[in-house]
Amino acid sequence: MRKTTFLLPILVIAVIGILSSIFVVDEREKALVLQFGQIKSVKEEPGLSFKIPLIQEVVRYDDRILSLDTETIEVTPSDDRRLVVDAFARYRIADVVQFRQAVGVGGLRAAEDRLSSVLNAQIREVLGADQVTSDTILSEDRRDLMIRIRDQARLSARGLGLDVVDVRLKQTNLPAQNLEATFARMRAEREREAADEIARGNEAAQRVRALADRTVTETLSEAEREAQIIRGEADAERNRIFAEAFGADEEFFAFYRSLQAYENALSGNNSRMVMTPDSQFFEYFKNDNTFARRASGNGGSSAAPEASGSEAAPEQQGSAAPDEEPATAPDEQASAAPDLPAVSEAEDTTLPEGQ
Image (tube, rainbow, N blue to C red; front, side):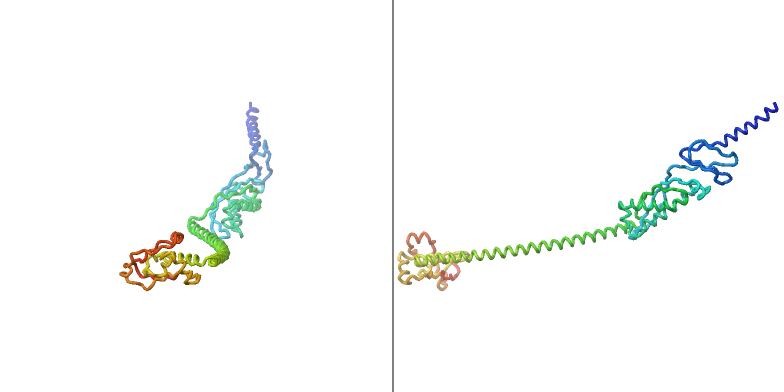
């Protein structure tokens, strides 16, 4: 009985000691076996492991990829447009021994604080570098910038036993106090570019218009030259025909010139005339012997009857025209010449001589 009483506590202590010396390493974590704060072993493979009870302790660290959101910071690119940037990083514990030595008992909280400082420093360095403008940060080129931030942060994080897997910029905004000024500057720049484009367009339009005006002028000049040539040839042909007509029948040519004088005298506003009944203007309206008298008296002269009126007569004399109508010319002449009044009643008008 006494032996059983003595062995039972020993057995219980032995069971408790055995159970406390066994621990399980999960596949999602890594473990360090510490003895009085010193690292004795690293357990990276999942399964059962052993330690010395009461002397050694086990510290577990997550072996999965972890996420870290950085604080919002303000950066100034090379074009002096301040931007508010926040980012997040994906990282994992690559070396638990170095991680334990770097952060000590602080664990993940201390590691994330130090990693956040590293990321902010790299973000400022990369985004504030030369030839990196705000347009570059806001464009698709930001992917290359994030790769540069990740690579530089990875080098700095190796001292903490961490491996930076990825870095992403979440938001890139303008500061609230500079937003309106930045928009105004952007509008002014766009308006300047639009004014330059308009000026270049007007210059091109002026060149096109000048070329078109020169082409029009050259075309009109050429057409006018050809028209003058054709007009001169036509006048020459007309004069030739007139010369032939004059040589063939001088009296008919004189009659034709008289008809032209009648037409010119009565055209336009010259519709009222004051003249004596025996004026030469009515020579071809007097009797049938007009052609014979002109042929005998002028000897075949081609001068047309003068269309000039005599001295202006008073309206009383103009209204006292003879009752008799002048004799008509032969049938063929009467059909060609219009009926003219002997005396009109209007203002004094002197008609030019028939050509």
